[in-house]
Length: 176
Image (cartoon, rainbow, N blue to C red; front, top):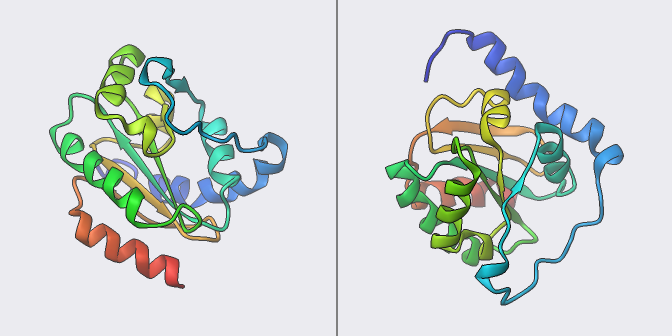
């Protein structure tokens, strides 16, 4: 990862949870239930702004949250996503929220990729595009951000992380 502005990057990453918690009441809406067994043909990828993503995350305050940024063209993402889908089944949703954010250049390509893997049936997934990518200062993917139950960033890391290592880290946060 580039270190052009390491202090600014660190400041942004530490301020995001505070902003997330501050704006949550203004933007939070009741969480919609995901229909079980929804036909894949009905899948529509929602584009989110930074504020919408932060509001969605803030509505899950009290859970450990893993935000996975990915793109269709990313080989390591293709390896990591099925592992995250499996992890979603292993750790209860009451403890862990996994959120996928596609940052492809084209929302149609992202939607096709998401649908092909069935990610939308495993956990919430959005299209963040360039705006969200810039806000999180993502310069390599996959890129994971882990928030603790209090909404503070515990880790943000670019590159593939083996699922066994990730699960161990997440379980330690959940047990805290």
